[in-house]
Image (cartoon, rainbow, N blue to C red; front, side, top):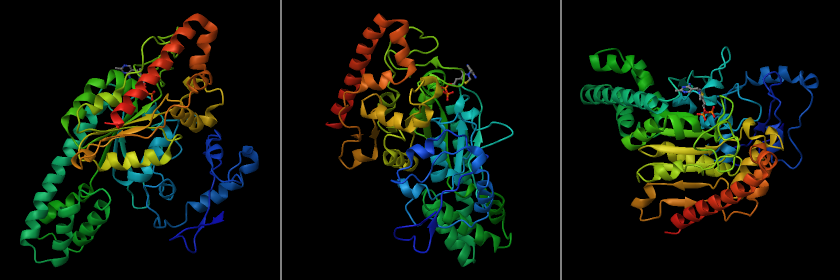
Length: 448
Ligand SMILES: Cc1ncc(C[n+]2csc(CCOP(=O)(O)OP(=O)(O)O)c2C)c(N)n1
């Protein structure tokens, strides 16, 4: 527990409270903690059980207003996660993305999860990580199939839009006829800016308060009262692995990207079909050993981001939490605010990679992947074109020459040097060339 520092934090204390019974023991939090004197240290469970009472107490404390901008690394962590204690493997690279997204948009989020880890760890019945806040708002999560996740989310989005159009029509009718000044001004404000993600919750709550204070004097008011939950703008996300997005669900995903609909996609890219034991996908990198690629994958990784970019109106970003947290938060903010399709491709280390440092260092592994050019970070922001600027922004610096060292730190590559040493030499040289050319392509785009 420490005194909270900074503007707006006067009189507040900050505490990291561990929940021993729900901790998965991966140690990732202790490893990423930036404090000089480690704030978190892993200890045996037996010795930590007294913390359980403190955790139960922490849950009874009131929710404070976040004094910071939630779209900053620090500020985001003062928002309550509405995704907690998932069924993911300890150290999973996928789950932290949804936890962060639930802090940024969770109270108005619709999430469709493709069959795969994204869905399975989010529905480990009887435990369910998606939770509601003190007002009862939280992510609504559902799954249809592995292959139709994009279409499934698009259907939700179309029905939400239809409902909101009806709400707007009834709201306009009330504005034109009501003598209730409070209701009129609340509805006018909602009609003007109710689609602004930052303002939609407060504007909607003001309409609900005005409706609650109004008698049901017309069909229009009755309709608005009956459908209050349609007032806040929903943040629609399709969430799934590379097996879904690059392979099996690609046709549907492409259809959704081409539709122009205001939807968001988060691909958690483990570069294999994780949930079914690590089969190769089109996201698997050249030289990697995976099921169906036991002698090392012979072709380079598909550039899903580059494909999405060709539409010109699609927001695209390639991100990695452990490599650059602010880059990820900026991309999430821009993607959600973009009026059109947005896709984020997020690097997600997995137990299938065989990280020699262990999964407790998965976030560090993301940093290493990015610095050596294995996973370059970039954003394609269509809005910049209207300002006469280059929409492509390359955040990753020139690769540091450590690509082979990075690859040798993971069994999926290193094992090939033992099983097929000659092939390994050839494929790894090709992988180096592939990554170098890909970086050169991004650099060229950024310099245009
Ligand atoms: C049409 C179809 N084929 C195969 C499966 C079996 N299956 C379920 S999840 C999965 C792999 C998912 O991989 P990915 O999309 O990369 O997600 P991850 O598990 O890596 O998060 C497969 C093959 C299925 N459910 N439906």
